[in-house]
Image (tube, rainbow, N blue to C red):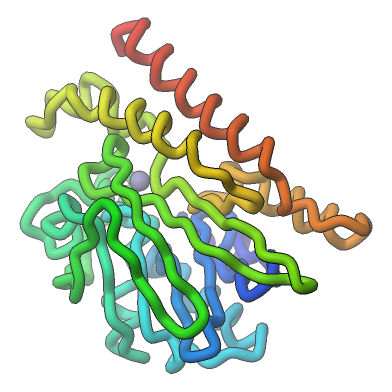
Amino acid sequence: MNKPWENQVKPFKIIGNVYFVGYIAASSHLIDTGDGLILIDTGYPNGLYLVIDSIYTLGFNPKDVKYIIHTHGHYDHCGATRAFTSLYGGKTFIGAGDEDYVNGKKDLTWARELGYEYHGAFDADEILHDGDCVELGNTKIEILSTPGHTPGTISLFFDTEENQQTYKVGMHGGVGANSMKLKWLAENGLSLNCREQFLNGIKKLKSKPVDVFLGNHVENNDTIGKYKRSLIEKENPFIDPQGWIEFLSMCEDMVKKMIAENR
Ligand SMILES: [Zn+2]
């Protein structure tokens, strides 16, 4: 991300206690649990000021971020964590398998591929496993392990309330096929098995009922398009259960095609 200022997105409420505080190149979400904030992904180091500004713009204080959960250990999701925690504190979480990505022991953060060196390695305070729960205030996040994009990619599920209704929020934590391509796997000594794991994860997630699906990149759930629609439509366009299934099917097809074409 060369020009963060061209990536800026005005922060907004998605639904209930869930807010978008990310930008075009990488999404970050904030959950107001009533007993502190949870930040999902910190983004690129040079985009941190956008995330901080968004948190303040919404009337929150980054010092109230108690938990930082990372969808996976790639640079565009955890690159700003070291800087964030040194400024404001916060307990950090990463899926089991990616802890050695973020602490720098394995050079697999994808920083190089994105045109950077990996600075700001950190040891995550907690390692998350399949079926774990992260609870803070009024929010209980169920963690499902969905490896493939990286070994430690996690998916998140929790409830939020709006207008006395409960909505199920879900997020797949890493769907890019780039890190599952034959060439990249071979170059980095990684197993082909990650593709099967990815497809198994999709199957597992399709069985989860989700009303509102989030994306760790704006294109995953058409974050910007839905936000624009929310300004003119009566119903909240982020309530999109069918979109969740369609998105997962699209990711599934993409990886199946990659396997079929031997890429
Ligand atoms: Zn990634």
